Length: 487
Ligand code: LRH
Image (tube, rainbow, N blue to C red; front, side, top):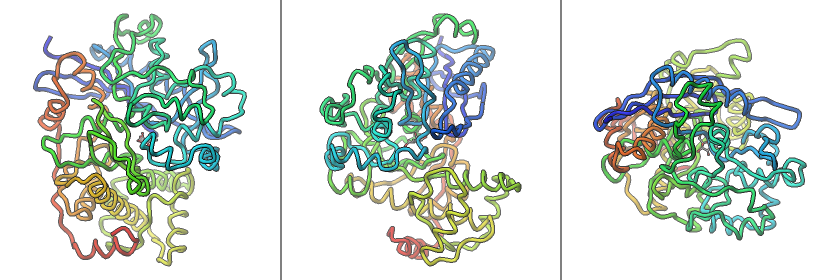
């Protein structure tokens, strides 16, 4: 056949989806087979992901995919860094923690007492995020669960394990743990030794495109998919899948993968491991084909999502289009926040946190919801500007076009503000970049697409994209950037 369907399991922080991607030599189309909520649960010991509910959603999604015509293969991606622990019998030890759980407070300092931040960075090339797996493992040190653990599986690898029985660590996601050597792409034996982490916990690495296994009989039976259906290793880190599907057809592009997080940066051939890069907290995560995702995490649409959750919990929910329309009518450059301020990381009353940020920094706090949303979007646009300028300078590259992919690409105001703030053209879309990257890596493994460049050309040729030319008042943007010290 010259056209095949692939099932992309794509779990995000707020929902999971199973998407069918139909791929031919010149065609690429997605249909959503199933969507289910991802609702973290707070237990006495902290905030957790409900792994079984997520897995059940995956199974139901695969069943819907089977009914919609079936799939030549299945691929799984989710957010990074989080993991489940298996005991010697292969049973899951407790529910995986959510990376926004506060138990990692102080863990980084304890890790640094053994291996300093400069040295960690020199080995892993990773940005410092308080929830990197290495710090989560430090927080778990001494626990009964960790003592009983024989295998650590990152969330997508855990789902693949339950689907197939296979055990492995996909490398793009493994690169977010803080335990992988950025130069060799292998687990760092030296780091593991110095940090007292049992190397046997970490499974053998596998690469996007490689087969992971085939569906277990009971999975095939429940879902109605073929018994021999392969699960193909994809870029299981959602951001790596999104970057794989950036519709860039020429060099000189930057990307912003914009969802709950904004991941802004460049695709490089080799890591940037300089002290300047470390100081600016850039990361060298792995992409497909051994590429480097040179980027920085920006707090992203999380700020808006948490505002909406707070307003809904207070009894007055607001629809996103209404909020954005109100924000568009607000005066520009009222209050501005640093989206990366640590107090914005945990779940909570985000409007109140934004107000107190403004008071603390001598600004008038936004009062209306429209003003709060305007503040968030302009602050994100300025963070996009700062991050892309830094990335270009630190990597010695010139940026000619910004590709904004992910759910945030549907937000016209954010796209326009980002074009204005950066002074660069922004090509918005596809919104489903992650699912497309997942599908395309499977399609390539099945011989339908020859290489990465062809994958991107196919996305560019088939998906609706919208271009925003930079406009607005340059001097006003420069002044706003200077005002919050981002230049
Ligand atoms: C985005 C993402 C990001 C990680 C974070 C934990 O979904 O994978 O790349 O830093 O979640």
